[in-house]
Length: 126
Image (cartoon, rainbow, N blue to C red; front, side, top):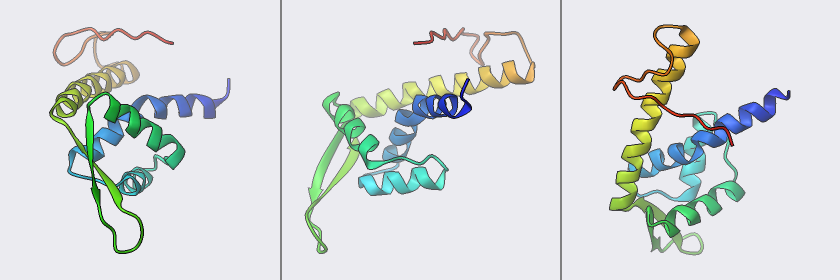
């Protein structure tokens, strides 16, 4: 088994959540998202980001506005919609439960399958 493939799949699994986390802080230009991800050692290519932003916008989770630029063409700035903010909150809760569950399993600190709320997280490999 190739460790790089497994690591890549793990990163892909949290990519959408990380991107939405950056956008939820306020209106953002795509290159700012790429920079934030790079700072966190989660390298992201434009060819990955733009299709994801389009998909999130088409799902009404994001909106954008054009801003004139003095150094080139207008720039598209993204922000969360109300629906996007609600979606983010659900993802954040799921993330926190997963972090706790993975920590519990890897540190053997409690019964398998339990979360802070007592719910069981179902994991279905694709």
